[in-house]
Image (cartoon, rainbow, N blue to C red):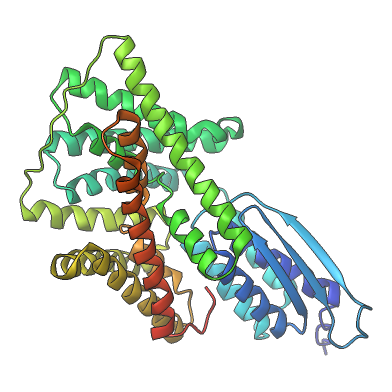
Length: 412
C-alpha cells in the first residue's frame, strides 16, 4: 500500500509562487493584476505574501502565518525582462496554479507542467508569426481605407519586419536597436516604392507597417497602473512605451534623411478610396492576425477574433453617433465587462477577451504620428498630444468602469 505524498514544505510553496509570478510577468500581466493573482495563490497555499511588481522585476516577501511573527520571513528579488503578451501560456499558467491550489496537482507536477511551456517554437509557429505581421499591417491599412498600392506596400513591409523580429530574437545584441532598425527598413521601402512604383500616403503606410511594434497597449496599461496607484510600475511602463515610440520615429526620420541624401523624394498623396467591403474584410484579417500575434491557442481564436471585431465595431458606430471619445470609452467598458464575465463563467483569464478587444483602439499609431508630424513641422505639439491624451483617458475610464460593471473573480 503506497503512502500518501508528504505535504509541501514552506520553501517548496514559496518556490512555486515565485515561479508562477515570474511567468505571469513574462506573459505580459500588468502590475495590479499580477499582484492580485500572487496574493490569491499565496493565500490558497497557506502563505502570507507582500508582492511588489514593476515592468523589469518584482520583490516578493513571504511569511508563514502559523509561525511566530518574524520567525519565517523570506524575501525573493526576481529580475525580469519586460513581458510580452502570450495568451496561451498565460491561460495554461493560470490553469496550473488553480490545479495546484485546489489539490488536483502536486507542487512537483505543477513545476513539471510549467517547464513544459518552455518548449522552443516550431518552424511553423515562426512562419505564422511572420505572416501575422504582414496581415496585421495590411489589415490595418485596409481599415484605414488606403489605396491598394498602400495596402500591398504595408503588407510587404510588415512581412519584412516579421522576418527581422525572428532574426533579432536569436541575436540579443540587436534587440535594443530592433525597433529603430524596423522603422528604418519601413521608411526606406515605402520611399523606394513611392518613387519607383507610385505615390503613397507615406506616413500612414509607415505607421500601419509598424502597427505590431507600436506600444499602444503599453501606454494604456501604464495609465491603468497609474490610476490603480501603482506609481512606480506605471511610470516605468510609460517611460518604456515613450522610448519605443521615439525609437520608431527616429528610424523613420533617418530613412527620410538618407533618401534625401540619395536624391530620392517620395511622391505623397492623401487618398482613401476603398468601399465598405474592403473595411469589413480587413477587419476579419486584422482580428485573425492579432489572435496569432497574441499567441492564443487555436481553440481560442474565435474568442480573440470575436472580441477584436466587437471592440472595433462598438468604437466605430458609437463614435459616429456620439463622438470618438465616447466610442472608445464604451468599447473599453464593454470589452472589460465581457472579459470579466468570461472569467467568471469559464474560470479562465479574462485577458483572452479584454486584450484583443481593445488592441485596435490603443493610441500607438496616434503617438507615432505625433512625433512624425512634429519632426516635419506639420502639426503643433499641443493639438497632437491632446489627441493621444484623449484616447488614453477614454480607454482607461472604460477599463475602470468595466470592472465596476462586472467585477472580476480572477485577477487575470
